[in-house]
Amino acid sequence: MPQVELTDKLCQSAKAVSGRKTDYFDTLVKGLVLRASAGGTRSWYLVYGPPAKRQWLKLGSYPDISLGGDKGARQRARDGRAKVGDGGDPVADKKAQAASQTVADLVDNYIKRHASTKRSGDEIARRLRKNVSGRNADGGKLEKSSVGCIGDVKLSELHRRDITKAIDALKDRGAHVEANRLFEDVRAMIRWARGRGDLDQNLVEGMRKPTETVERDRVLSPDEIGSMWGALAHADMRESTRRVIRLCLVTAQRVGEVCGMTVDELDLDMSVWTIPSLRSKNKREHAVPLSPIAVTIIRDQLADVKALAERKGRAMPAFVFPGPGAHAPVTGAAIAKAIKREEIMKRGKATILGVEPWTSHDLRRSAATHMEELGISPFIIGHVLNHVSATKASITSRVYARYDYMREKREALARWADRLTGIVSGGAEIVPLGSVGAAPP
Image (cartoon, rainbow, N blue to C red):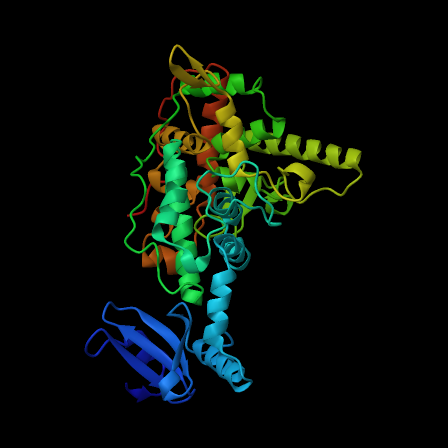
């Protein structure tokens, strides 16, 4: 049991010298131990009490819990020793808490302290509450929760089979994509809890993704786009939902980014929509040139939002597509449900608005495909889509090259808008018109 002054460098390289584990005792904070296992994991412990009744309190895992800082291992060890000095027993307290805390409590804590900081935090919270805890934010039972909910299971009794139960409930009803996403959510939550010390082991280690999904390649043809666009005007959905769908196709942007559009992100006089880094999938600010079609759709939506706000006697909301109550934007999940509700089965064949079933993301893929057929460079399309693989693929483009390709993006989306206008008005087939913005060497 070596005694050393722990440093970040030592923590990063700490290994089990011999046997299953090696304990590194810190010389600066009495009782702080970094345990390195033969499997490569490193965990923090606070050791206290007389030799005959030595207690080991797990503080968390490294590097999830750093060495220093206000919330680091040294500070946690100091806080633990202070409790012992006051006559407390942190190990007994932890066992009592684990015995009383349930999976529903863990879900609430994870959502509040971690998932809420994510761009997709609302979706993560929805999946975990509906399919794992079975409880809403106020602790009440959800009416439409999954049959696989395990919210009442004590953390001290949580087993891998409980996690499997929650996921199997989704698989049994055919929701394979949702099952995979829930598995990823649960895996992240379990790892987070283990890193904090709420759980002593990673229960999902070694578990495989529930189902293998095939990457979608659905692209709507010009005829399908024309039929869908015409039928959309008569679909049983809100006009704002129709506008979100149209903008997904016109701008080639993600449905979640369109739904979350705010008034402050828009400069309609300059025909530009700037998606901030906090809302973009790749965490990079993205300027989207707006074609006249896109500007018209947005102006019409803003006019309706303003009129509704005046009727309700409330201030103009910050969101272009506000959800119920205007406290938050409409979600991508709500758009997906609205599209799915339009699905019709006839003679064993499903259609949505008169064409083979499609999703909002298929519209983005369709726009990109048809821009390429117009002769627009894939490199420029990558910039339109804000794909890191195209825009920041090399050290040169990530660090040195600062040109934003705004002119080329504007030309590409204008060409696509012109082609789309022809499609929805019964235009001819797509004809390549030359190349826009050739890819750099």
